Length: 387
Image 1: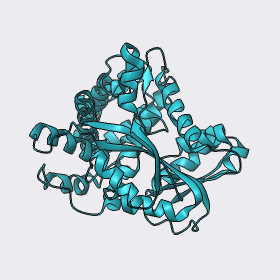
Image 2: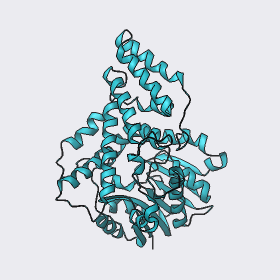
Image 3: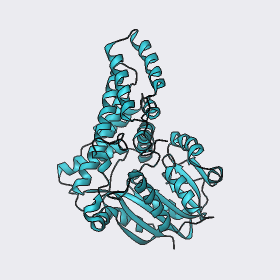
Image 4: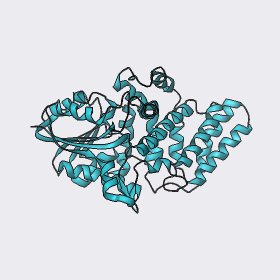
């Protein structure tokens, strides 16, 4: 996987051959566009982009039109219609490779203090969750909305727990199994399994069988959290615990402010979410399940209070300029990727990739502005218990 700090400097000439072959077929001859595309690929290599990930992310040719249409036809002050599960699955078919390229195998944010690396903060964010749940060897745990399994692998290593990762997206299951062969030992792999499924209907997990469940920025894909957390309530043992890092609109969000609505829609469109809900509604919906709310709070506000001038905003990687370690997710990295994808898309080599990249740029812009204005948080945490 592409981890922070492990970006490649080496010039991988093998990267060019797939594009050269496609370019000759598509255009019948060398053109200035093909030459420029290869030059940009070389620039990406020189700049430190992990080119195996670039190859993967450029291969999305379909589905983006269907996905975009559900957002384009909806007014800013209306909820996007359609199935939450369908939107999420379509989104991760499109976005998973981009996420891995730019963010590694843990698709989430974290609080951070100056002097701490981004990768260290991501890992600490996962370990803090495990400590809150009190995970230990022998515990049966559900990672609900697992992505490509990065957090599950690290939490299993840290705690000794046995983890079942669930994702709606079959491609992510494939990636998780492949990454596990690189990131986990044989013993760790024996304690982790990855399954395709809907976390609102965990048919393959028996009632009362899990000691804990967690969601890392994943429950936001279903607006009705009562449905989400009721299924968690079913699979938990009596006394079992639930932890979630929640994406919500804070009490600073004004539903009558068109600028705020545009920021909200950019985040939704760029992150596969039909409707982001307020923090207060999320808490009401959780408590409606019968779960006992033990602890909750916004880590964004905690970091501002506790770290003071040493605080590094959670959205900083998305607005960073030149940085070798943070190149893929930085503004400059996104510009290089967009330019490369635009040219390759224009000559028919990577149809659909530009639209996918544009969608993700909406997300980055919305997340940064929403973070600066503090109308959105990606880490309102809740810890709850089944009676």
